[in-house]
Image (cartoon, rainbow, N blue to C red; front, side, top):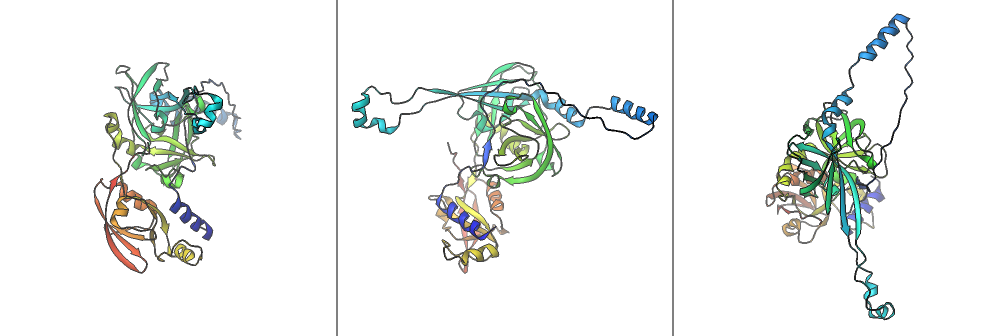
Length: 402
């Protein structure tokens, strides 16, 4: 990290509330198309005798389907299209409420503009024969109407049972009998970098689209992705993901769901992100019951600190504050009325340990907090200037942005 970039990060984080910068949610305006595309592959040239060529051709003819075909056949019919509608009303510009303008435009000006209907598109996956469908919270956010379309052509009205914006997960219920196809859920904890990754969904309205790639990395934090208002360690993949894929499954080579596709980088190609299925399995039953998902927080904005970065900061005459030259997590901002503020944490403090466990990265600190219960007390070892002290921070409950 360059010198100027470090200071710019400190100044920005200390004066602004975190906002979504680079994350792009994958819902799009409804567009139904049925493209017909044929792709021709040139045959491989084989340098061999006619007999060997004939044997190889025969083997190619009777070869079984690829693992992708097998995986998609196992899950494909359980992947659904989700169309949403919502009504948006907007008030007139406050300037038109000024009596001066009312004299010219009359007293009969409406207080708000006519209602506007917005349509959205996403994907989902059936996880129970009773009609439970897992998708993204942003797919169904504020939707007045949800329509679920199955691969066999049937459509049903969907009811949002529960949604959690912090993890961007939601569960929809449809009434379609008990003969629905169900996708098997895998274990994202067993996923390794380099594993096959198959994305299934409805990108850009192209229904039942399948793309193939690998797992590029694991535990990519939402802050690194550019979505700091979420609490997710994503699976990163290079399987093609586009707007409309949101809520659809990411599969392994056995056709098991290992993630829920949710985001892309607007400034990159071949970089997509999925919520690990273990996160979804942990809260899906609560969402189905309509229960609120509790998320602990302490209320600090932080940066990973090294002695080198601290020294660069301290040598800058324009630095907002001096920091200890140690490895730890720098507190850039303490949110007002937060658990951290109540415990006495200050801007410029460096968190060295939590409950005796050393912490050196901001993502590590966040994961420790996420693993606690609301109301749990964390013992933090903090360095302030040349002094170290112990602070007890009782986690609070993170409220939804909505």
